[in-house]
Image (cartoon, rainbow, N blue to C red):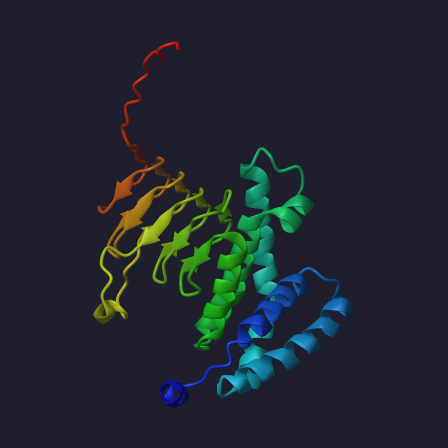
Length: 252
């Protein structure tokens, strides 16, 4: 048994802890003042280069330079997301509350950071970042997904957004929603497997939308608990008709 184990490849799984710390401080750094952010970025760069070296990833310095240039753009996108939260959630009392306390906002923030690294074709690290957010918030957004401006996730828990999903502007998604693939086959890896959600769509809790050819048309409302495997025209309302039967309890 020992000889069998010794022949297996070894992996530094402690990098998971390093990535978690890197991701957490990267998220925090987006909201610091200029001087504090500059100091924090020095530490983040050092950690990033250590991580890329550990994973035998070349061009770490150039990748960090390209990524750092996008941080102001990411912050601008997140401010629009936060405004969407404040606008759409009647429980939100302030923008500060959203930045500090909303798991859906946190999940979107980590997605937007990991997505930029994914676009730079950096392997492994974006996925590790997204899995950190998944464990923290219960929201699983693949860093390869394409998500537009002013994105709102309410309650966060149980949401799955697949790698080739396309979500356009001003979309609202509630807990338990899945944007998934209708087939799970390795030979489909390079194809679009997940749905496209057009502008101003609302998707309520536990809706499941499957398939790479599926388009949910603009301004549509997808009700709770629906199962969709066909495209929906714009300005549609889709509901799941369930009948609740109410009887009278027998008194003991």
